[in-house]
Image (tube, rainbow, N blue to C red; front, side, top):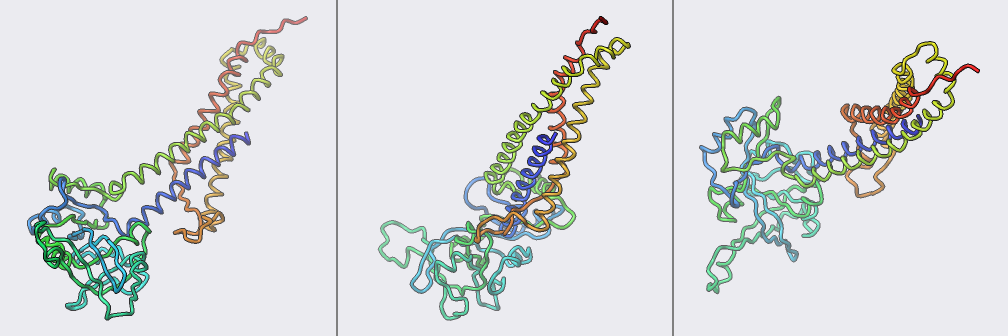
Length: 379
């Protein structure tokens, strides 16, 4: 019974940790990724128009639609330079408030009067040695033009624009070391995009489900656009987490199966020990079905008791970790100090079902043997 209890508790704890990690990743990416993203089904860009934006805004649940231009460019600051990802965003992008909680220096602003500002990733800021207090040094951004190879004038081979560094954000290393946010018109002029956009980012109004809004956009815009939600924007990452969770479930299922062997042998020994008592019951008129049910109930008591103790133990351990963070990540650079844990009712339910099925299967053979016991004749 103790083996079943500890196996059950371990399974609940592991599944809860995977839930916590999945939630942590979603919270990290939610500052950068839109709830719903609209891209061209084919090619790098599509042409934006008032008609297209009106169609998107008419879909129930759409609160804010931001136009996006995204491309790589060379950035130079004083003597340092790097290739980074420029993300031009429309003025209503800041209304989505995705960057408010991740700004670690300065303010989340892209324009102040006629002055343009860039919001930088922390890694970009470090690599370029940017001093946010220095308002006299500008970021120089270079983008290659589509010119003929025979051109010898270097100034005609690239576009150049300058912008002041503004706020600095810190989300996740993948983004911090690559991205700069700039105003949409600044990016459109630099990349010579005109009305072309690489994507539209949608914020969902309160009270609406993300999947419902996504389906509404798919039905409205048709097959010319690729419309993805948050999870679909990182399919390999979330798929890997779910696969790891599944393998953990299978692994602990086999561990519980091994633990149930103790129930199997215990009941077998009980059948051998109680041969005389079984004979007496059968002599008094007990049927084979009744004898079998006695040992079934014995296995049920063990399984239910072990599952209940294990579930309670898992609940207590997870609650302690959530409230006190006893088990730390062990890394100073980690996003959170302690392992994240999130308990879900279905995990407890499926674990209990697995335990009960395994222990009942372990009880089947001993119960069948007990039912076949022959009556011992009186000597």
